[in-house]
Length: 244
Image (cartoon, rainbow, N blue to C red; front, side):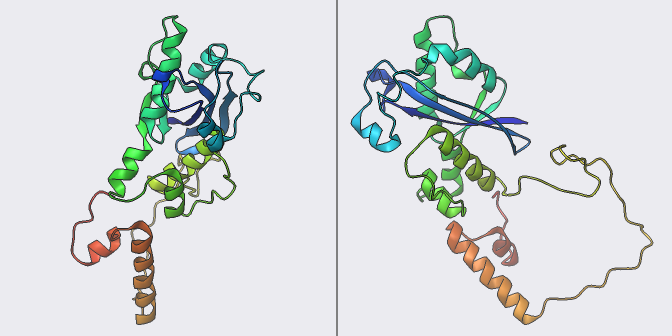
């Protein structure tokens, strides 16, 4: 499974008002593992950048003066994302800008959906954590992801952070190392070692009261961190585990 975690920075908020993309950052995941491949490009927008936008990402008109335009990199960009699932936080914003750029080329480029599918992590986070803040900073705090190096927004940096958030939010474990697996196979098991059915029964040692109390304290911490009762507690209470 090939996924591309994507983020953009722009001159303002509305492409309908002539605002443009000025930075694209993409991180490649294969079978939920970062491959090290990425696409990153600053773009000349041929217009001024709103002062409020500069305060967010720190990118100035002067910095972009010698950068290529979207038309110069569109083929490389589409080749990088083609056939993948895009992972985007607040996808309508980025997709709207990318579609505006594609349409403005006037050369028969279709919308983004012609090249790939899109998963909106903001929608996913709202389903998991209804009524809570689900911006990228809040999710980093919720999932213990260090974003202290993020003083300003940047497309590639935010894509890297979003990749960590997405992997944590959708299961946490991103690699599976088993004896007999081949290095580089992204968790594919080459050999399964089966246990002898006639082996002696394993000794079962029940948890003592101190262990049980520690387990209860850990579940309480998880409940407070995630803002909802964790699945293990619901199961112990005889409730349905739900879909999380």
